[in-house]
Image (cartoon, rainbow, N blue to C red; front, side):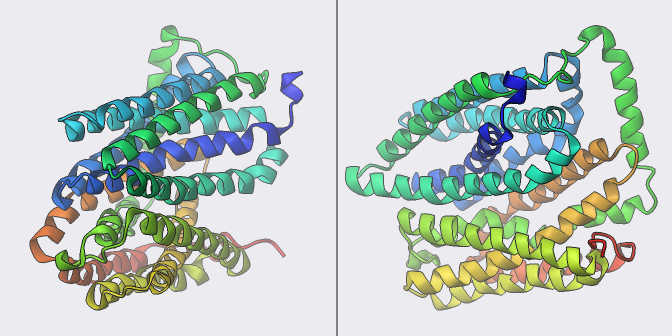
Length: 424
């Protein structure tokens, strides 16, 4: 009976659940620490390290093949994420909130990266291929809604509770308890409704580990034998070089008082301007970028999309110079920047699909995403220190200069004619 359950009963919640822990680890942690008075240097350095599980997740992905079923991995990891969210709530009122919460965020990041592996594998096993294609847009939409709900709704809620209670600690503790409870409910829901596809068989266990490990390293080796791999890796690592630095300082810039060079927004206003308006624009940019590539192909669309991604970064420089007080003006500037980011990111994703194409495309795409995460992690680590040294205006000017390596690598890559273009 459960094997026949409609995909609408579980795909939206599965991918909404996939998005929540990622946005918590990558974005809410930054806002939380900024509200608690942690320096930009420490925020950027230590939260950038949280990318590491996504960098190295291809290394432990065979575990999901060796032990248990994909379905069981999904449910167990969701319970673990719920417990981790509650664990963060427990650390916030303590004297060592930064150290203790970071440790829990690390555990949550590893659980979230592992959940990505299990959920994507389960999706491919639970649906026939034609249904996989039909629901890919649903997956993406609900993942984006999780981002908007987290970066927009939850940040707004934390701001609202702070204003009502007068306590940042109490507000964020409540938010994380609420998220922990909701995530446990989500895990219970999936334990009940996820189908049990016949293809989702229990892994062979430790006895097959040696053979699987040999196969895994062979797949890894084949990736690094691809033609022009040095240029490919350079592009994957440097395409988002400026954005990796900007993203870590975006929320601190919006929250910092004007006398420190920021815009002095409240937490609620950041939830509206950056978390809701900005992410909605990002989503629309991604959809439009995908449409453009489907019409003219990646090769023809590449440079317009690259420029659309990097040129709007000037919005942050202008905001830092002008310090507008109108939330409408600030939201509009963020919408332009995020829409351009959405456009440019589609080119990056399509190039990864091109690189991964071949007999081992799933594994090779996972390796690409690891390098993508590494390209975000390393520049983000020093970005807070740099901003603390020079201030916001010089920092955002540097972000514009940092687009040069991205342009150089874009000029070096090769894309086949018509790749990504929809057949007439």
